[in-house]
Amino acid sequence: MTLPPPDNISAIFQLENGCAGVFVMAVSTISPKIFWRVVGSKGTLQIERGNKDGRHGYLVSIYTAGGHCEDSFHPFSGVDEELKAFIKDVSQATLKEGSSYEAEPRSSFVEGARDIAVLEAMLESGMKQGALVNVKTF
Image 1 (cartoon, rainbow, N blue to C red):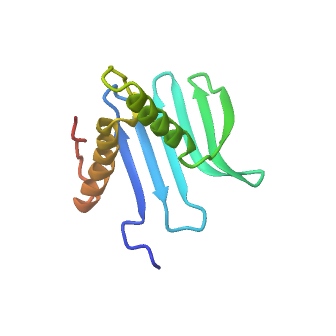
Image 2 (cartoon, rainbow, N blue to C red):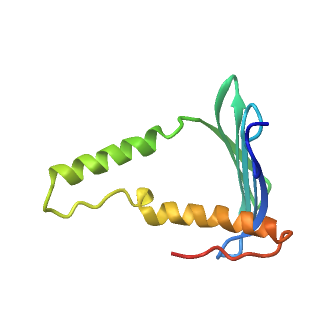
């Protein structure tokens, strides 16, 4: 009740390479759910945030075109790895002042802007009753 809409997203998408997928995120629950499924000509990748044996994490399932499935579970660690990379980047850039230190590319403002662009496209599509919306590129 304290979280204003939009508190859930359900979207279908198509990647540049033609693979189709589904994304579902429900944050208005006691245990937030995130679900990705991407289907390609050589198989399917599915990622679901949830619980296994009392631990929070991500269940990753890879389905081959032949029907074989491999599952793995990755415990959820919040943003620990992202914070470690950020601290390392800041430390290295400070220590190597005047030199050319290259930060972790996944932590760049461009990658953050790309993530936001995907969410904006999903929300814009919802406001247009599910109309196709292209993601802005950077």
